[in-house]
Length: 113
Length: 114
Image (cartoon, rainbow over all chains, first blue to last red; front, side, top):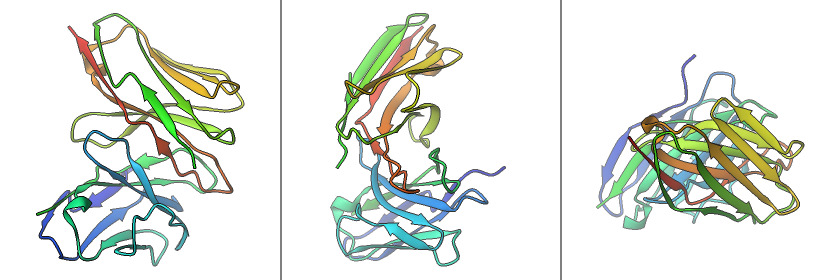
């Protein structure tokens, strides 16, 4: 079946602007994770959804970052007042409830000028 | 929180040789340890994983070992091929309930020279 998809694949924005990044998980996967990967680093956890609720948002760096998953499927990561330090690849992963194996999307490369 | 250290950061081998990448973790409650392969500009792809109830797992040319006492785990690739060249990440997770958030190492750039 189709894997995890993310849009856009690339996003260039100016400092101070608002951006939205979208993740479509694998059908039937109730768990959804967002990670951020800086150049030369491993992915870092941002937020975890089980169904519609954010069960763990301990990885969000500050209150400029917010994520939603209103219908328990597609999720949107929202970043307000972007800063140059927000530039990174934002990865989404999904898994079946109660299972640990996570499948990653291709990521969105965010560049803040 | 969990901390995962990964070594080496780069590894260059000749085609046909073996490659070993090692990781240590800090949280003794971690119980799930996946390995991901990431080619340049691509998504991380799961290549093998191990859970804390076993000490070793093998899948064709790839094997992973886990030492819970020492809190370290290793990836072994035998008979390396040029297409094995990529960045490899280890990760650890503690399944507190259903949350399997992963803590990753910094990655190992493996180059297999033909």
